[in-house]
Length: 184
Image (cartoon, rainbow, N blue to C red):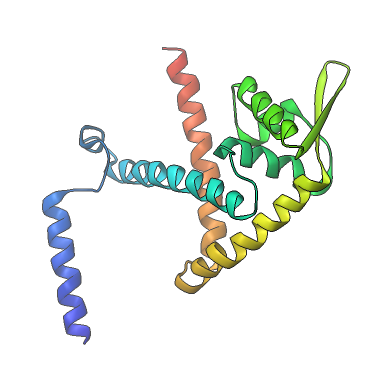
């Protein structure tokens, strides 16, 4: 049994070496870090899959018609049950275009999932009871469909924590590189 697995792994490694790294842009993988290109392709796939997941999970929780950013904003506003400033929501979600978050808030207000008001020049937002209930239903759907699947196949909690930490650090590298690119 192990000999067959070793043979299959060797065949896959040979095929992978012949094909090259799995990336979206071979010209970028031809540089000094083809591994980073593989991570970027993984991020692209994960980004869109995560967006689809959020929209469909929220629909399964009874709230249809939201875009991925709307779902992120709703969950962030519900986070810890405290009102949030628009600027803080943008900062936490790393969204530069404040108007896109403001549009999501208006959309969520029309659906009566959040309410907002002004405190001086600042827009403040809080989740409504129906918004909080939607987040609770989403959490149940997430536990049943996503968490159960990840727990059954791995990675374990420690690996997930390390991956989250790595992705946050990597985002810092991309932000710094974006600042440097802006100055060119």
